[in-house]
Image (cartoon, rainbow, N blue to C red; front, side, top):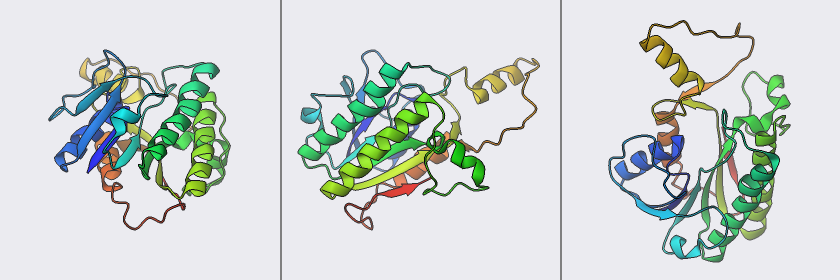
Length: 231
């Protein structure tokens, strides 16, 4: 199976590439100029230098599936409202339209648990149909993109899996994140100040995320125009 992937040099994207290659998939991966994967790859995919937005149809040719993992503003990296709307909403919608125009009707899109926002406080285990009540600019941009994609998919009979990913951790993660910071302090024998733990968070190894995403590439049982939303 041939995949057009965005976010291939990112934390989750790098692990996805390795898992997809191990499962004999071919990949065409969009990346920003001079960006590099955060981990060692078992083999190199076909890289395309560019940005989300227009002019990607030529690289999507002959691809069977669109896998979209790229995003701006992922914690702890900050992005202003202008960039969030440009890359997480408008550019994603344009990416989907281009995929649809050339006949890619199977989409695997990565979302975020942060889209649930305040509604998450009302559940012990958040269901995938919980209301979206985002409380941060990043989460709001992801939720807006989801609503646009959901409507586009229903209107045009596309097969879409929307996977909301919880707090992944592991090799290749941005060094200022919790797990790399904790690991560095432990290896150097330093104290690591933390909060009192009033907040509840679900953490998942990034290898498990990549494995599950690759498993989801089987769209055979999915109905067109009826998106599957999973946590």
